[in-house]
Amino acid sequence: MSTQASERTGPRTLDNAKEWMHDKLRKRVHPLGLTDPATTGRIIDQLEGLDGANWGRAWGDAGNEALAAGKRALAEGDRSAAREHFMQAYGFFFFGRFPCPNHPAKIECYRLEREAYVAAGKLFDLPMIRIAIPFDGRAGEGKEIVFYYRRPRSVAKPRVVIMWGGVDAWKEEMTEMSNLLLARGLATVAMDNVGTGESPVVAVPDADRQFIPVLDWVAAQADLDGAKPAIVGRSFGGYWATKLAHQQRNRLAAAVSWGGGAHYMFQRDWVEASRHPESYLMELVETRSRMLGANNNEEYIERFGRLSLLDQGVLDQPCAPLLLVNGKEDRQCPIADIHLLFEHGDPKSVRLFPGGHMGFGPHTVPTIVSWLETQLANAEVRK
Image 1 (cartoon, rainbow, N blue to C red):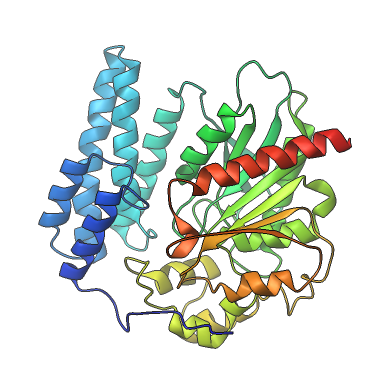
Image 2: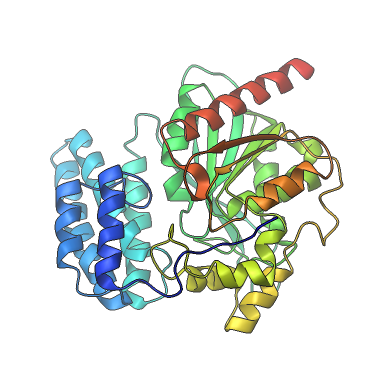
């Protein structure tokens, strides 16, 4: 089975990056579906470099302007305008730290991204609550897990979906899915993928430890039906959803791996070939290395190799109902991993969409949400 990964052999030029960004902006897709198109287009045109200083300054300036406008609107009592300004600020700061905060200017954008998002979340029609719970980490690991909790109205004890992103889309980027799930009467918990955002751990093989306290928290809430939630892992986060579907199957109603790997993704040939996929803007290796806690290229390759679920003996175990979703032409995560999952353990469901990584399109998220709703309803019947 082919594992050819990449059409490019090196980093993008500034002009090529601008073309890529304008294309995503026209389509209003990740990572450019959050901010005002006219303002965003002007910033792209005026961008002087892809380095952290130029990048963080250009997007951070726009974020600061929107953040100040949100604070003014809130002081004037216009909650709707304040929410919109805060969401614009969040979007600009998000892109300012994108794909990861690996420069002081980008680190500051990430700090302000969280500030703006929490400010907006308090003004959502269904408000978002920031929650931090203790984490019993090892030496050098963090001591808490931060997540965003939302619940629907008029549902006394809603079922729950826990979700997380990948290497560059974090808990703040789960808003669209959260909104759709809330509209179906489901509560949502959005957290950071292992090794990203405010996650307390890096991506070592047993880093699924970070999800257990969140499962415990959900199960302990008297106003939630949280004994068996569903989970969604987006992009690289799909890897951990697949692992949890096997390792925590008795605690889960269902799991979705949306663009995640399992084995072939972590082999040296794919790691080498996927350094510069056409689907990615810049700094994929740096972003993955940050997630892995890798300090050089050999550590990057070696730490990736440790993650194979086939080598860990996970895939032949029984698993919770598992949906595998991706784009048919993905060059970041090999479709071969979906075929491999077919061949091991319990049967799985699959949906492939046209296009590249994650199969972004108008039907992708609604398909996932509908499947989750069905699985949670079926789990309710089986009680």
